[in-house]
Image (cartoon, rainbow, N blue to C red; front, side):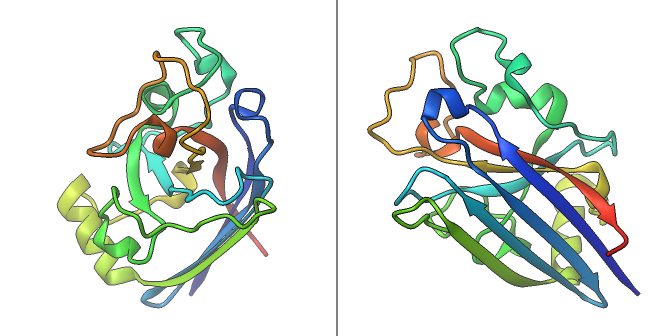
Length: 187
């Protein structure tokens, strides 16, 4: 049986970053494989973009963040400000999603026009096993998740109030630039 999900990815923090990233993500479960495609346009050019699905481990449905989540009113919705509506970072879309190793340098890099396309086949059993180890369930519940695209150039001036450090990576790497609600599709 095949299950397919899609997310229409819309801009977040567009005014502050000077561009309006947008795109589409599709997730197709077939047998023991999850096929993921993500295509983005108008992202900050020549920049690596972390991308993940976020959600709540208890199964509560995640929602996309909007500028309403800018609780400190600094003009940016940073990673910590997304958590009340979107939950925690769960699965990265890097070179090995099933390892769930979030902080790394193996994410797509946008070209000079701000475009990138990502496509990968993920061993679903391996991903579910790692997901269960980390979150206590092997059910990915994609229809209760949101996808975030992150990352702005290091030379973009961000207010000191913008948070989101993850290990050695600062808020430039983790700043959300686009988000989409993952939904079941009949397509």
